[in-house]
Image 1 (tube, rainbow, N blue to C red):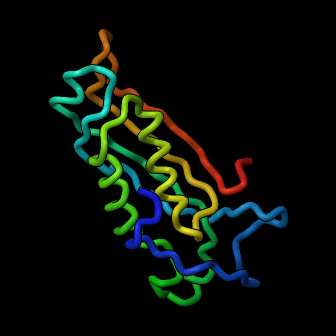
Image 2 (cartoon, rainbow, N blue to C red):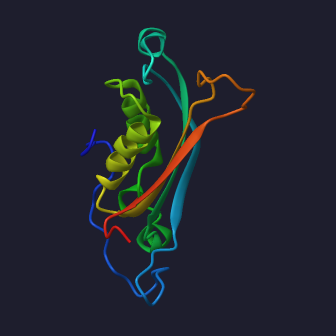
Length: 147
C-alpha cells in the first residue's frame, strides 16, 4: 500500500536545530505499538479461510525538529494516518509469511519522504504451531539507504 495519501508527505527541511548526528543519522522517532488488525495471512488453508489477529509495532526514524519548533501537524508524520495505513496493510491481500507482511508495512511507512528508517515488528499471537509459545514475531528494519 505504498504512497498512502493520508500519511503526511511534506518534504523535511534541514534546520540548525535538527536532532541529527554529524554523520547524518536521524535520532528522532515516532513509535506506534500494538496496532491490531484482522488478516488472512499464512501458509495453511485454514489460516487463509478463517483469518486471525495480527499485532504490529512500528518505529519510524525521521527529523522532528521542524515539528518541535512549529507545533504544526504538517511538519511531522501523522501517526493517526500511519496507523490506519498499517491496519489497511494487515487487512489487504493475503500473504504466506509475516516476513512479507512486515515488508509491505515497511514500504508503506517509507512512502513518506520524511521517514528515513523504519522498524516493523509483526506479531502473530495465534500462530498455528505445536508448542506452548506466547507469541511469534518477525522484525524488519528498512532504510532509504539500505545501511
